Image (cartoon, rainbow, N blue to C red; front, side):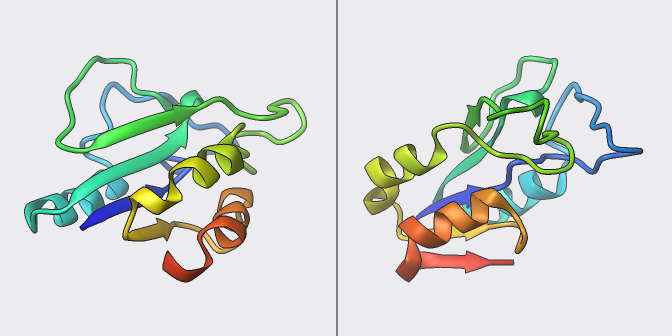
Length: 123
């Protein structure tokens, strides 16, 4: 099964700021993706470029980094808005069997709900 995980923020904000980390392998979303990988599924994570790790590393899953739309108005740490996500989902949603969005009140989840209605799970 091909699984798409939409998780714009990789780590929790502290005082409205998310520090870039050297690795994402110790994050909750990476562990979540690894659970699917361990069961033999192909996984892609969609996140924002603002949270790209500072170190170079290989992942057992694909990870796509989207630029932030209007970061001065919509702080990526508080209200992430991945630029081009809707267009990308329209072009690629059929490639995935399951789409998992990580937050109820998120622009990315709203976009996924419009595009991937029948295969979206929000957790």
